[in-house]
Figure 1 (cartoon, one colour):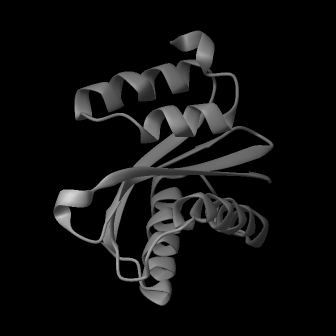
Figure 2 (cartoon, rainbow, N blue to C red):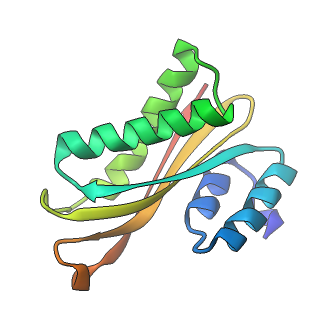
Length: 140
């Protein structure tokens, strides 16, 4: 698996698709060994546009700042916001505005690039859950 972690995008997506804390811990170790910084968080709720955008942006920026993945500078926050916006586009394709989402969010970075991966489930009814993924990559 270590040979698959060649970019911040791959690192973030592999972290986002882990299903257990054990697997997440193992993947974090592999990501760090590959030379990337990373953080994982979660968000969920109704997909109404304003609520979704606020929750995801707060979750990503907060996790990045709290973990030291980014510094509190305009260029680093700007890069994270753009990568997050790009990742959200993958999640929002053909989603009903009243659907619910449960997402795992992973962010990985090196000296020049930052990637945000979103992976989770969406549904109008709990019995109709299906998986969705999005990835955003931005130069810092």
